[in-house]
Length: 411
Image (tube, rainbow, N blue to C red; front, top):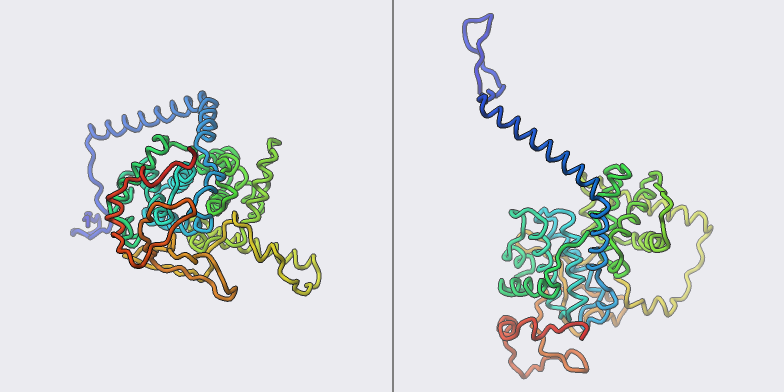
């Protein structure tokens, strides 16, 4: 608290204003010189960026093609199925938010995960481990050093399913499999370029980010180029928020198909993702999307007239497409370990995902613990015999390296 002299009274009166420290002339000169150097550097960067922008974009387009995952190769996985994907994406989104990582880190994590799964056979109990390794690599690549997750923190979020050696070895195995090619122009990169060029507001930017993260849950967009996804999500975000569309006449068939496919996957977003985008600093776009969909449904009902009687279920409804990516229900069980939300990733059991009674819905366990599998036979994954005493997962892990029991997808 500072004190100031009063002109009317002969005593000191208290003042709540903090006393400003005095800066010497030498320090002031250094500060001015530093600010001037920063201004000059920013201007030179802008001029260089304008001059080499075409070359930069050409390089980004090349990287975009080289680092694009192939969903058809992921279809060849023996144990990893597409219905497991929403559980892992929910986990990665919660971990990404818990460590306050950059937006592009999440998209790079999913890209590394999908690229690895298109090159190596992954057992279901290692699916979450691969996701954690991809998150570690992506955070080390582009995020701040003090925000990179620690292995013990990730292990707590995995309910202690793995040990520290497994995280380290899987991280190195992912890097070697991808030949240390980590850089990838994410959808967030192209979105920022388009937003700056078209002068979109923050609400449109947040809605486009929400739509892009919804696309992470579905197989249909695994092999979609980030540049196409960025344009499609921004166009759809403007339509949802009632903004005028910027039509430059360069739309092609692939972008139109992407917009249509993305619009068909908005009705049941993940509860975790919806909760993330219901915050004020993200413009509460999840609630605005729900309101827009409710309005469109009401308009459609009025246009159709009186409802028709329910029809018998067809074969298509009884046997859904195995390549579609279902969403977690609103009543899915979510456990908490050490303050972190830890949804189950790959529950074990031979009958997992098989519903014998339509009225009995499967509720996955809180923390699935599945042992490391024995080498699979040609007929499929063999069940363990009850009379044999199997070693622990840590002992099995120490006896095999990932190169020995995780073979390539394509010979």
